Length: 145
Length: 273
Image (cartoon, rainbow over all chains, first blue to last red):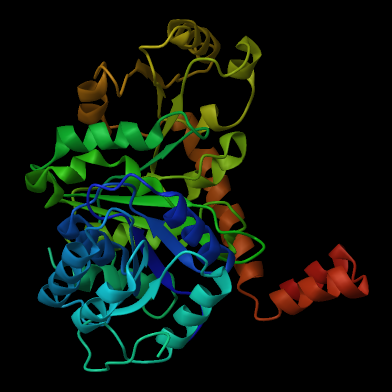
C-alpha cells in the first residue's frame, strides 16, 4: 500500500523549536501526503487523540529539547494501549546516536537528524507503507539498518 | 464514542470505499476570509456547547493542485481540547479538498450526516478561507454563518453580491478591534435593503463578547427564505461538477487539453457522454 498517507507531525513536550517540524510537514505535503500539524507543546495523550481522530497512519515526533527518551516511548505505549497498533512512529530533531537503539526498541521506526534530505523521509514513508511495521507489530525492522 | 471506529468509517466514506449512514440534525458551515478568526470562534463556541452536547467539527483545508498533498493546520487553534472533560464530547477531523479543486468537497455533507447518525448533536463545517468564491459551502450545509471583521476594505465590500446573500447569520468578529463597529453598521445598512435580512452579531474571541449568543443561536438558526433558491443552485452546480470530475476519463482528458490541444467544448462533450 503506497500512495497518499495521512501523517500527524507533532511537537511533544516543552520544546518551542518548530522550524524542523514545519519543514518536514511541508516536504511531506509536497510529496503528496495529507499532513496534520499539532502545534507546539502537546502532551503524549493529546497527540494520540489527534492520531485517533484524524485516522493517521503515521506520526512524526519532533524534539530538540532532550526529552525524547521519555516522550517518544510514552507515545508508543499510549498508541498500543489505545489499540492503534498499525500506526508507524518516526522521530527527528536532536537525538544523540547513543539514544537511538532504545527508541527503536520502544517501537520508533526511524530517527532523522540534521542533514536529512526530504527525499529520504519520503522514501521511508513509502517503504514503511509497504510493510506491516506499526507500533504494535513484531517487525523489528527500522529505517537505516 | 468509539473514536477509532468512527474515524476509520469517515476515511472509508471519504475514499469512496463505503457509504455514509444518514442522520438528521443541524449542519452549520462557518465561512469567511483567511485570518478572520473562524477557528478561534469555533473554539469558543465549543467551550459554550460542551460537554452537554456532542459536537463534530469538519475543518476543510486546501489540497495542493501540484502535489496532491495538503497541510491541515486548523487543529492548532482548538484550545478547548486541553480541557479533558470537554474534549470527550468533541470530535475534530481535518479534511483536504482533494479533487474538488480547492473548494469544499461534496463528500463533506456525507461525513456530516454520518456523524449525526452516530449520536452527534451538531456538526460544524469550517471551510477554506477563500472569500467570495466560497459559495460552494451552501451545497454541503443547511445553515451558513459568514464571519467578517474590521479592516476588510471600504464600504463597497458590503454591497458586493455573493456569500453575504447566502448567509443565515453574519458574525463580525474581532469586535475588540477598532473599525469593527463601522463594519457592523455598514453591513446592517446594506443588508437592510433585502427582504429578509440575516441577523448580524458582533463577537470577540479575545474578550468573549457575543460568543454565548452565537452559541445559543447556532442550534436554532433558521434558514432564510431568500437564500434557499441560491443554496439549491449551489447544490445543483456541485452535483454537476462531481459528475464531470468522477468520470474515469477526467485525468486523461485533462492531459489531452494541456498537451494535445483538445478544445474545452469538445472535452465537455466527451465528459458528458
